[in-house]
Structures are given as C-alpha cells and as structure tokens.
Image (cartoon, rainbow, N blue to C red; front, top):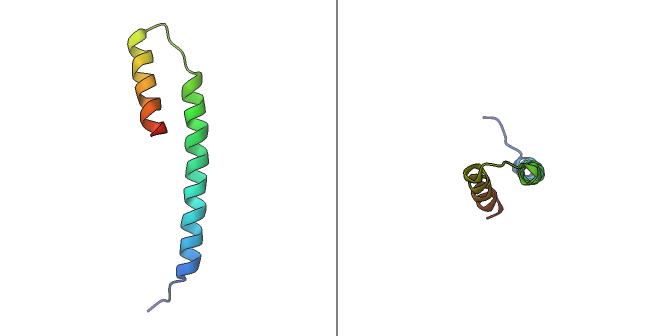
Length: 54
C-alpha cells in the first residue's frame, strides 16, 4: 500500500484554497465593472455580487 504524505497534501490544499480565493476576487472585480442599461440585468448582477461577497 502506498504511503500518503498528509502534510504535503494539506500544504497543497492550502495553496489551492489561496489560489481560488485570489481568482474569485479577480472575478468579482470584473463583475463589478460590468454595466447595462437594463435594470433587470443590473439587479441580477448586483444579487450575484452580493452572494459572492457573502
């Protein structure tokens, strides 16, 4: 049976979480730059941004 490096696995998971957080922040920034003259679209966009921000 192959031995698993738990500490290495945890370190990789932490790095992946940090990378995901960074990408989500960049995506959120891009969403905030979007505009539309359609009030319904803007309301949906605002709702999505609110959900992403927690």
